[in-house]
Picture 1 (cartoon, rainbow, N blue to C red):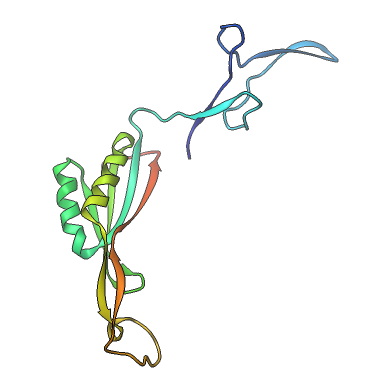
Picture 2 (picture 1 turned 90 degrees about the vertical axis):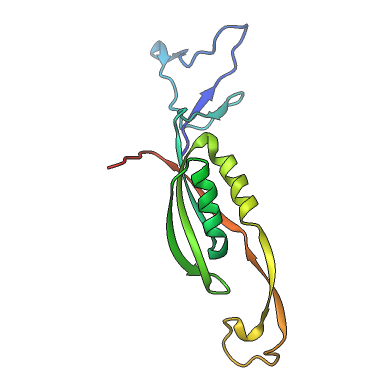
Length: 163
C-alpha cells in the first residue's frame, strides 16, 4: 500500500494550509486537517511519499534455462536472491522462482536486467510432447510455442529483518 500526501494549491503565494477557519451555527471554529487517505477535493492532487530507504520484494518467475544466468547477474550487482524450484504453465516445464529484495530506486534497473537476460523466444515442439488429453491426429507435426521471458511481481516491503 502506498502512502499518499495531499498537496493543496496555495493562493497568493502563501504556503497552503490544511487548517481552515469555518463558521457554523455554533460560531467560528477551526476544522481539523483531513486524513491523507481521503479523496482529494477540487484542486488537490495526491503524490506518493515513500521513505528514501523503501524496500521492494521482486518475485521473478523464469524458465530453468535462464535462471542461472540471471542469478549470476544479480550477484554481480550486489543483490542476493533466494532460488525456489517450481513447475507449471502450459508446457509443464521447470521454472525457477527468485525472491529478490532491492531498494525502490533499483527496481527499474533490475527489470531491465531481467528483460535482457530472460528474453521470450519460440521453440518448435512436436504435439506428442505437449500435455493434451485425448487423441491428437498429427502427432509428429511440430508446433511453434512461446517459451522464456519472465513474470515479475513487485511488492512493497513494510518491514525487513535479518535474524
